[in-house]
Length: 192
Image (spheres, helix red, strand yellow):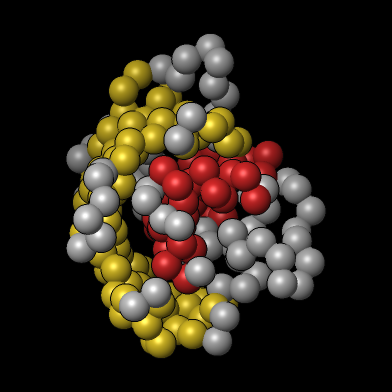
């Protein structure tokens, strides 16, 4: 479950629990976001995301909003076009240490490299290496509004998901996404 959480977090959120002010703003419009998981023998997957300035800030501030993933340590450093985030999060009785390096090419592209270590191991893995490459492709199409993501053929609006009531204890470990949305994210990135 924690490996799936790492997959979904990498797809949806680009800065862990850091503040939007800690990162350069992304250009408003449609973005292609390609996620690659090294060592998992899975193909890279590309999703589409529509953002504007307000949506970008809200998504960055959302971070890993799961009530089940408690991050006890967060350090954001860097300036210019590079940011580094180191965090320690706890979920389901385990610990996940993350090291994220984000490199921006202006406001129209970025590369994220996220290395995580799991203790105890998850599904036989004690680490994961997820890379995300994103680039601005132009204005959002008429059928997408800011916050919309197309993942595995399913449209998910992240802002609408944030406004849903939080799940009860033992519920959704991804925050306010529906079970179907979580499954689409995980399926799109080769998870089970």
